[in-house]
Length: 99
Image 1 (cartoon, one colour):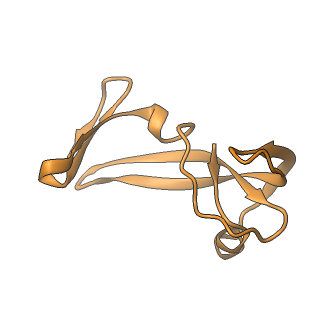
Image 2 (image 1 turned 90 degrees about the vertical axis):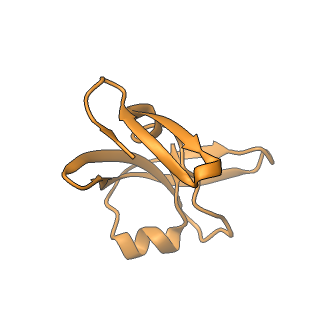
């Protein structure tokens, strides 16, 4: 699941639907609010509307945005072409393909 800092969530005006407690690699437990963001993603004429579940710390924490698989990475087969500085996205259900 994606985690975004509280400051970013305030800018995006996130609506919350629940609360959870999670712990990361350090083992430190954080109280989080659960919400969703809607993202439109694509290129040229091919676009996808995605609903991505997110967690937002209740308190301001010194953290970066963490991108999870649910809602985005599990929707596409993604090929990273590092030497060419580009990525190829192919929709998991076989429909859609863009570079």
